[in-house]
Amino acid sequence: MLWRKWLSVVLGLLLMIGVLIGLLWPNQQVAMATSTSSSSISSLTSNSLTNGTSSQTSLKRNQSKSVTPISKARLATTTRSSAADFNVSVGKDYLYNNQSTADKTTAKVSSSNGGTVTWSDDNTSLATIDATTGVVTANTQGRSGTVIVTGIVTASDGSQTTASTTIKIGGGLDDQTINEGSSATFKVLGSSANTPTEVTWHQVKSDSSDSVVSSGNTNLSYTTPKTTATDKSSRYYAILSFADGSKITTNKATLTINYDHTPKVIVTSKMENLTDNNGNTDHELTNVMAGDQPKITGTITDENINSSLSNGTFSLTMPGDISNTTLYIDGKEYNYGMPVPDGNGNAAITAKNIDFTTEKTHTFELDFTSNTATNKKFTTNAQLLGTDSSGNRLDTYNGEGLTINFIDGLLHADASDVDFGTLTYGDIGEQITGIIDDSKLLTVTDNRRDKTAQVITLRQDAPFNNGSHDLAATLSLKNGNSLTPLNTSDQQVASTSDDTSVPSMGPDNNQQLVLQLSNAPIQKGNYTTTLDWTITSAP
Image 1 (cartoon, helix red, strand yellow):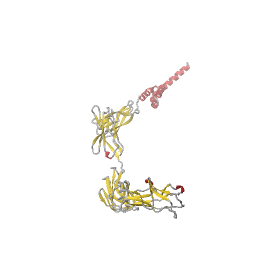
Image 2 (spheres, one colour):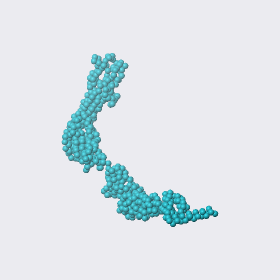
Image 3 (spheres, one colour):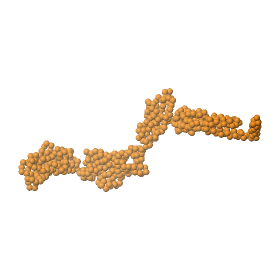
Image 4 (tube, rainbow, N blue to C red):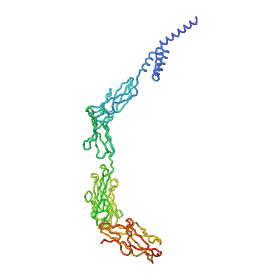
């Protein structure tokens, strides 16, 4: 038919045009295919294999010449391998550096993802690593430290990923640093294929003496007793014994002690009376009289050998009236110069520049003559004012309290007033006990050094009288169950023997004054009388 012919002509013309275009511009289609192929590669790489396949199918449908380059680009992308993240581990994280045979371990990666693994470390003086096998070999020269082992995984596309771990290199023990007075614990580090049958611990002191401090057990740690200054620079090591007869000896780990430099000063002192020391104690003299010769001695010790105390001033305050005073420091007479008054009649005797850097203990002695003739209680104590090497004041260190009781050597007595209250006829015949102003009828202080026997007598000067009339009554001293009526004659109420102090008299010794009214007329009034107490030497 006519339209079929026209269609045939048209199709023929179109085919010819297509051929001419292919002949005249052959690269145009290739360029188009290449452009589309690049788009497909980009889609495959950044999205997914499905996207790339879809792009390839589209190219097949549009241009058959583009199929081959698109297919090759897609194949290269899907088979590429990139390095992935991984971890590095080692068989042992501690290697010994002091064994005859070098200690070894092997490094491994958790996954190489099909890549190539190579190895390196950051300090070959501590340990070396085989770049291919990952075998780590510790040094045998005793060098200690931490080495970083790094694994590098290289993928087939050339990309690399790294990961690292650390291995400690040492002799089995770490040095320890503690404060003075604390305990240190040493632990055997690392691991061995077998369990030791015995572990023996040694201490090497600063004088190089070596002693066993723990044995007969398998303890892989040792804790020292509380450290002191004598443990300074000590070293410790362990010997591990195994069933096959082999042994591992650790390095000697050093114990470093942070010392306490606070001075620990102890001041001791005691006294004695060279004239008469009876009744005295080290810290109290009870009967020092004028003319006596007491002596005070003592020591000053800094018990901390690492103390910052460098220098000290000794001081002892004494009564300002003592004489014949001599001070000795470390057995040698010290010229202390003029005592320093304190404004209270006392003065400090001092010794300066006592050196504590070479000698930690010093002695002192103070000899003097007492000139105090009154009853006086005096307290003091030895002191040290410490300074450091720069002259800075540290502290004042005090000794025990010292008490000196100065006496006049006399016998003293003081009588108390007695009150019998208000009496009535109803009290006739009753024994009325007097009320004492003080706790004693007669207070006696016997300061005599030579205590001879004494007799105490009591008499009533006159009957009770109100100014115009005597009271019909009897006054008696009741001593326990004994009753001694008083009158104008001396009545012996107590006595003492030689070397015995005269005691006080009163209720504490079961002694009281009692009054008994007679059955007679009583004139109202305020009645008084006087009692005379007398202490005399016994015949």
